[in-house]
Amino acid sequence: MSIIGHTRILVINPNITSSMTASLESPVNKLLSYHKNVYCDFFTAPPVSESSISSENPSILGAIPSINSPADAFASASYCLPFLRPLIPTYDGFLVACYSEHPLVHMLGKEIRDFHRRNNQDARVVPGKQEQKEKWVIGIFEASVIAGLGILAQYRTTIIDNDHDDLNSASRSEEEASFGIVSTGRIWEEALSKAVHSFLAGSSTTSSKRFAGVETTGLTATELHDLPADEVRSKMSDAAARLVSKSLETVGSSGRKRNVRVICLGCAGMTGLEGAVREGVIRALGDEEAREVKIVDGVIAGVNWLIGACRMKT
Image 1: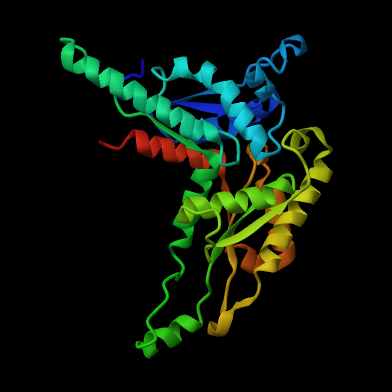
Image 2: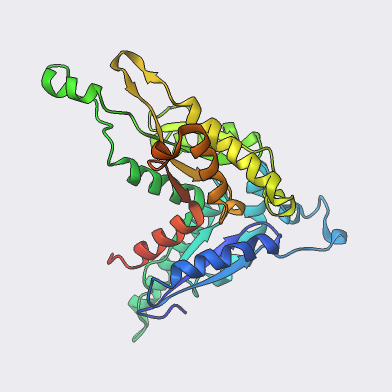
């Protein structure tokens, strides 16, 4: 059971690569040192023996070392859910640490709502039984987009009515800031673009001026840790440089620049590799303008979001 006054968060790695989970522990624990009475545990999808994998038990096919497509994400969600369902009473927040529109976010959300419904019904009829405090779930994809939009709030994004010429002329000299994503395999360029549009506008085909797009490294999540560090840094740096360079252009007749001001790390395996992205930004923009670009780690953004959500009075 969760303890009143304490916040317990479960960071979920929905693949079976325990080394990837281990890479998240140090940055998350460093963050927790700034928060009193907040505790994080870590979950890795349990491995299975090859002999147990068969078409008769398709959920086991979700026990995979690296989630390299939306199909992998769905399979991993189906596989992990039965292991996570019994943990719902123990934790206040759940972070799905896979950078995708991961179905486990919605699956766990439904399980949490059902848990609250049952618990609150019991609390009304069982003397002395208290209602459970609210529980929350979010994915690192959603958390990073939310954090990125918060950063972009300091830049002008409102289209000013042409009747107000004085304000409109002033706005012409300002930039249209946007956020982008550096991710792994090329399949994520389209998949994450659709996911962003769906998250922001409710439609996978509706674009947003705030989104600059996705650039990829060509690596899998496990390769981020298994390949030589210099090769990984080079590919991440190149992807970041492409992302900020392609948006150095004017937009329409307004003459405003649509600059990337936020880069989201598009894989849990990129946690701790912000320096490689920063190198690419500096190479493309120079030291001074590169300082304007903020890098968002979805794992850290997700833990921060859950801490805030768990402390809200609902």
